[in-house]
Image (cartoon, rainbow, N blue to C red):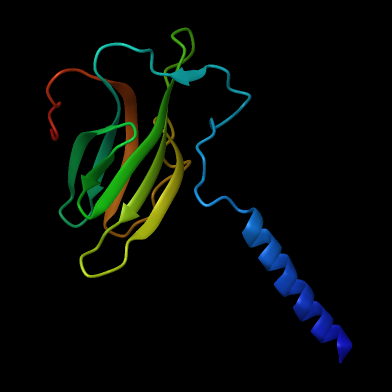
Length: 153
């Protein structure tokens, strides 16, 4: 009789302690501390942006668009926020890595966080968005100059 009660109390205590130690927002950390080749885009004129490609599986249309670092960008019902965008040093093989937070804002429903993590341009399937209607992948990290770049091709 006491053992089940003790186990239930232990489970409640451990879940409450774990909930207190979890951070409220995941902080983007570089994808690997072993990869010293990744660095932020060098400063220059323009805004730091991630070039993304979205696929609408219903219409089978793809769209390339630029998402400024630190700002939300819309693709269909998705709100995509790029927290950081890193590239390899020039002497290393080309690579772009972006920390994305993707939230689905369907009309009449509560917002649903679908993805928060690093996406790699060279291996999009390594860390992919799992959604029935949309796919999003990172193409590159760059600096956008002047007027806004073309939103689709």
